[in-house]
Image 1: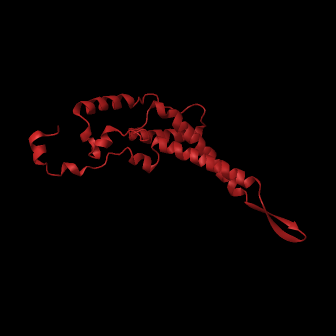
Image 2: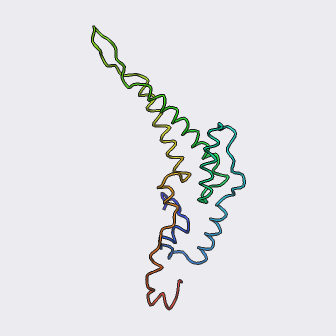
Image 3: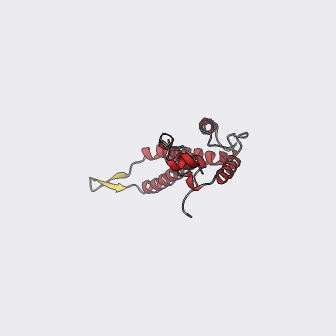
Amino acid sequence: MPGRNKQPLSVIQGKGRSNHLTKDEIKKRQEQESKMKGFTDNVEAPSYLTKKQREEFDRIATELLRLDIFSNLDVDNLARYIDSKTQYLDLLKHIKRIKATEYEKVNGKKKAIANEDYPKLMRVKNSLFNECRAAASDLGLTITSRLKLVIPNSDDNNKPKSEFEQKFGDV
């Protein structure tokens, strides 16, 4: 179907939905997926990141490599995530210092006036947040994105085989 993301073979098999695939199709798909995995021999933080950002890059890259879901091809995506996260956190510090309303004395009375900069900063904050969230999801940094990669437990292994399965096996 055009709108669906292709799932790894291990996920399809884990869900017990691989009966529509022949053994030959499974073998070809395994070979293709292993080729698509990518190399991990050159995972280094890009030079445009600051020292602190490079430390964060190394920390996250190590974890992603341990999960076996990161390769050389993902380096720039992780760097962009870290850069937008840094900008987001810096902006948050500034927003906390700014009040949404300012007070002005008019005829001896305090009157609340909206701070004109506040809505602009909030739009930038939301934009950076969405950028971070999208990048985190693409990299597998969120629980929901990792759950899409995890092989679910299959209860089919404990289920007794039908008479057809006993006679013909996994056709």
